Image: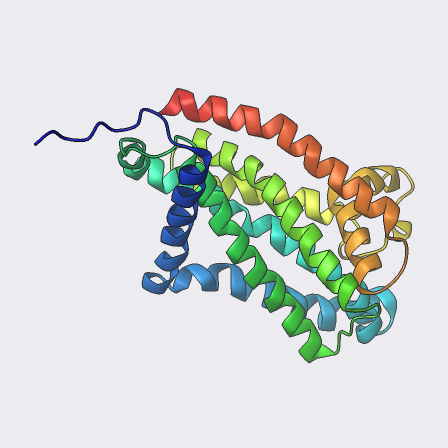
Length: 263
């Protein structure tokens, strides 16, 4: 009896199936480690409550007005921080040898990485629904329509998919998962706070406003406000998509190069 010869190449359909299988592997890990969900669930709830009721009255004079302004930006901020878990999970797989074992299997070379990034979209969707749900309990209401809300969610997921490549690069070059989190928070906090997520750009010093206006976080926050609350939509949505494309073009090749060097 002869052993059938293995195919030297994996077809794109097989690679896609393997990617979804590995993505499911990452998602079901939450069942064994539910604290992983709490890590990016508790923080946005605390931020929404604190900024609404501590700073809302001081910034816009009314907590409900401030909630309407701030919540779309909060969804953007939370999306960026959730992408760090892509790099953290990838770094854990690399340091513990899981990634090497996956690459030794007869699967597509890109399937483990693509599976990790795909699984992140499920977590992103959960975090978006969570923040919007908390906002709705506090009194936030969609000022446009269901199409605008769905458009904002899709735009957030597209940007998250692009920004995941930044997290992948950090996860590959960091020595351990703790360094991924430290580096990510150190880099993301200035980017998110020097934006119009929490306060209108007009309230900032004149020299700072141009920086805030070109910040991709500000542009994405404006796009989400336009889609969910009302206002300009076309320009900030287009700007967000262009920023997402630029991030992919820069960080995807760097991430793949760094990953090849490490493994």
